[in-house]
Image (cartoon, protein in one colour):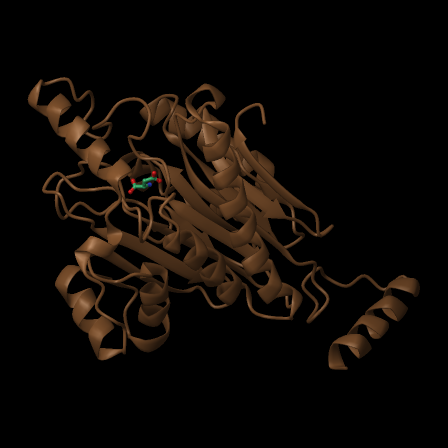
Length: 344
Ligand code: ASP
C-alpha cells in the first residue's frame, strides 16, 4: 500500500515537472547483473549441452536474485541469493565445484558490500563452508571486522551457527583433472606466469559475482570464488578484497570482477571504477571500459578478465578482455539476457 501511494505521489510530482532523483525512496528502477567467470571460453570448446547448462544456471541465479528485488527486498539480499544459486552449482568455481590449490585443497574467498552504508564483509581461504557469501554477510553484520581468513573465519562460522561442510562436498572430477594437468605442467616447467598456472581451457573461469539495485535505490555487490587452479595454499585473490574484486557505493556504482586477481588487486579495479565516476564525472561505461580495456590490459595483457557493474539509474555494463565471460542481467525493462561468448 505504501509503495502504491509512493508511486502515485511520484507520478504526480513527475507530471508537475518536479525532478526527483532516481533513488527517491521506493521508486528506483530495479536491476541485477551477474557473472560466472571470465576466461578462455569459446563456442568451439563447449558442447551444446554444456552451453545450455551454463545458460540455465545463470538464468536461475538471475531470476532468484530478481525475485527478491521485485518483492521490494534489499539489494544485498538479492546479491546473496543469486550467488548462493551459483555456489551450489558444480559448474562454477565457487562453493561446490571450486578449483584446487597446489596442495589439493579447496580454499574459498568471498565478499559482499552494501552501497547504502559502505559496510562490507569478506572471508578468505575457508575450506568447510558451503556458502562463503553467506559467511561474508555474517562477517559484515555480526562482527566488528571487514575480513576474516582461514581458521579464524571458520571458528567465527561455527560460533554463528554455520554447518561444517566436509572437503569431499566441494570435489568435482573436472576441477581435479585441471589440478592434475596443471601440476604436470608445473613439473615440466611450462607454467607461464606465476598467475597463469594452467594455460588454456579451465585455468580459472567460474568465479561468480552479482550486483543489484533495489527499489530504494540501494546498490550492493558480491563475489565468490575458489580462486585460481593450483594457486599456492593460502593465496587470497582479489574477489574478497574490498575495492579490488568487489565494491558498491550508492553514489556511483556496484561492481564485481573476475579474472587474474593479482592484476585486479594492484589496480584496485572495482573501486577505481567508482572513483573515476565520482572524481572525474565519467559515465559507468567509460570508467569500466577504461579499467578493463586500458589499465588491465597495460598491466596484465589481454585475457586477464572482466567486470560487471551497474549504477543508480539501472545502467548495466559487462566489459571483458578475455574470449568469453559467463554473464547475464535483468535490467530496468525486466528482460532477462544471458551471454557467454564475446560475439554472443
Ligand atoms: N579473480 C579470481 C581470483 O583471482 C579468479 C577468477 O575470477 O577467475 O581469485
